Image 1 (cartoon, helix red, strand yellow):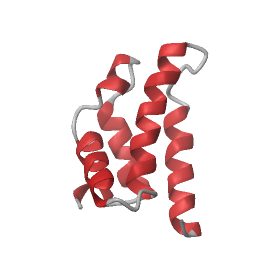
Image 2 (cartoon, rainbow, N blue to C red):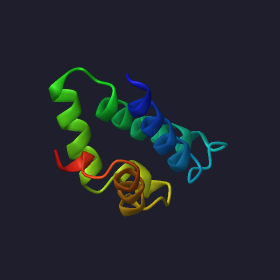
Image 3 (cartoon, rainbow, N blue to C red):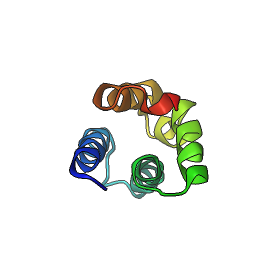
Image 4 (cartoon, helix red, strand yellow):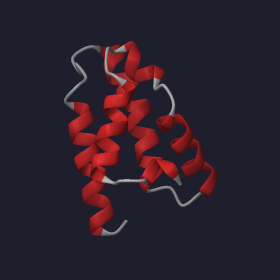
Length: 88
C-alpha cells in the first residue's frame, strides 16, 4: 500500500473509531466488521473483495446503525477523505 493510500485509510479509520464505544463488546465487534470493509476497499488486491466493500459501504451499514452511528456520516467521512472512492 503506498503512503498516500495508507494515510487515507488510517484517517478514515481513526475518525470512524471515535464514534463507537469500544468498551462495549458488541460495538467493538460491529466496528471490526466495518473496518474490514474499509480495509478491503483500500488494501485488497482482489476485485471481488473491493466490489463487495463498495456495495456494503454504499448502502445502509447495519453494523453501524445498531451502534447508533449513522451510515451517511460514515460515507461522508470516506467521501471527504477520498472523493469518489465509493462510486467505482
